[in-house]
Structures are given as structure tokens and as C-alpha cells.
Amino acid sequence: MKRTLYCACLVALLTSLAAAQSYTVTDVGPGGGSGGGRAINSLGNVVVDNGGISFVWTPSHHYLVLAPLPGGTETTALGINSHGLVVGQSYFSVGYHAVSWTSGKPTDLGTLPGGVLSWANAVNASGLIVGAADGTNVGPEAVLWSSAGPQGLGFLTGGSYSDAFGINRVGQVVGFSDLPGGGYHGFIWSKVTGMQDLGTLPGGGGSSASAINDSGQVAGGSDCGPACQHAVLWSSGKGSILDLGVLPGASYSSAYGINNHGAVVGASGYSQDHAFVWTSTGGMQDLNDLIPQNTGWSLQDAFAINDNGQIAGFGDLNGQEHGFLLTPIAAASKAPENSKYSAQQ
Image 1 (cartoon, rainbow, N blue to C red):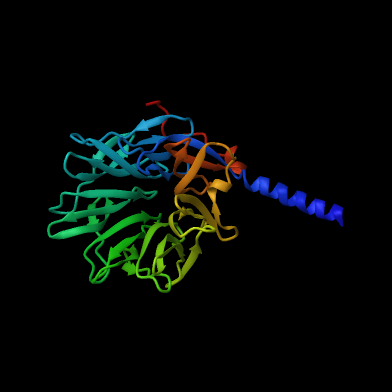
Image 2: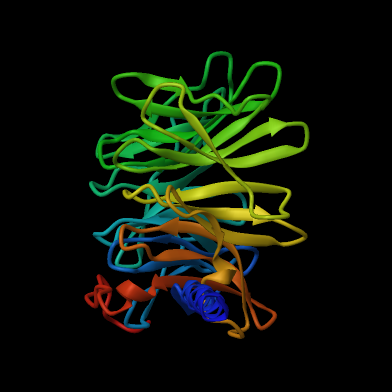
């Protein structure tokens, strides 16, 4: 009996130790104002928003600075594809414009006709870009930029403000739109269906969609009653919404990224956010429990996950705000070594 109990405890201990070291953690540089690692591509290149001039970090520890537009002062980068195309915005003394960067050089994406403001949030494999812009007599509207220029995606019925946060390989777009009388709902848009309301959890008044994978699974957040907000996963089935819950003892959660295997990342709140990863088999797990202990890191927000399971986000490193890259230990030796960028900046 004692031997059996000892063996069971040993197995549990070894299992716990293995779980506590599921990822290596890499510092990708300063990330002020909850910026940090905002996006990651299949090569492991991480877009880092540091609250000033953003940059791309590569696995060879090179840095590519993302210059502002002529006359610009600062940049915020939020998306990257596997061809190295980066998107975000460039700030002027007054206002800002959506930008794409190729090898660090910016291109102004412009606004809707008559507009003065725009911003870009994500880019897909073929270079289609989404975000939002204003126009003549139009409040900020979700926008799709292609070789044909900016296309307004409209609003949910009765709405007047929308924003697009994610786009997949087949051109499906997700984001949120306001509703008449107040509130907002997440949407999914395609050329065939136009903008469709994703709905909310039972009892919820609002929702927002943050990311979409190539299978049409959508990650985001939804109200679930008074003072209740949970991360959610919408499936490709109409009206399907799954409550991902919260970390133990947390008061809320929201999902920011999803990969093609259906793994979701985001943050769940205590007095301070804790970054999480959610899978259909493991449920929601605190990423702080899945890295080696005593590293000085407090992982607060996980913004993006690639198909290799690498996660980019924001945290606190020994009292300083920094971006991080998590790499699954099983995949650490398999991570792509080739980088789109090779010159040290």
C-alpha cells in the first residue's frame, strides 16, 4: 500500500514538474504600455510594439526597426505574415494612418474617401490587410485593404462604428460593430455573406471577435451577464459559441489569438492579468505555470500563437515591461532557423 502510494505521488510530482516546464521563454525586447509581442508568423518572427518605434524580432536575435511614414513620429505594429509583411499604423503630430512595412520601409495604406484616420490590425498570407478608417460622413468603419485599395465592410444593422481585427487565408474577416442604442457585437464578414452577427454568451450584452483561423474558428470575448466577461470560441457552425471560462480565482478573461489547431491564447484577470493558453484537451492553463520558475517573468497577456505553438505576448521581467516569445520545449529544437530578416538593425 505504501509503495503504491509512493509511486502514485512520484508520478504526480514528475507530471507536475513536466507541466511546469512546457515552454522556454525568450525576451524579445522592451514593450511599453502593454505592447510587447503583438504578432508572430510561422518563422517565429515577432512583431514588438514598444510604445514608440516598433520593431520585428527574429529567432537569430536580430531586430528590424519599423520606420514611421515621412513626417511621422511613432509607430505601432500589430500584424505580420510569413512573407514578412508587417502592418500597423504611423503617427503624426496630429492623427495616424494605416501602414504596411516591407523590409522595414513603410507604405501609407490611406483612408476611406474623405477620411483622415486609419489603422491596420492584421494581414493574411496573401497580403490582404484589415483594420479601420474614417471617411466623409462615416465614423470609423472596418476596412479591407487589397491591391484595389481600401474597401469599407460596413456595420451590423443600425450600427455606425466597426473595426476589423483578424483575417484568415480565405479572406474571412472578424471584428466588432456597435449596435443601435448602444453596445456592440462581434462579427464575421466574407465576400459571399457580408457582415454577420456572431452573437454573445447567454445573458451577455456585448461581444468582440479578435482572431480567426483557416477553419473559420473565431476567438474573442463576450459578456456573460452583469460584470461578467469570458473568452469565447465561435465555431464555423452557425450560432455556435463556447465559453472558455476563466483561470481559477480570476474575475474575467478574453481571447486574442488562435492557430489552425484551435489553440487559443489571451488573458484572464486577477488584480493583474495572467496570460493563458486554451486547448480542447487541456482547457485553460496559466502560462506562468508552464515556464521554468524563478525566471523573473510575470506573463500578463498572450496576443498571438502560430501553428508551431509558439506564443507572443507581453509581461513583466524583473519589474520592467517586455515582450516575450514562448516556444514549446518539444518544438524548441524544431523551430525554423531561417528568418525573413537577416541584417542587424
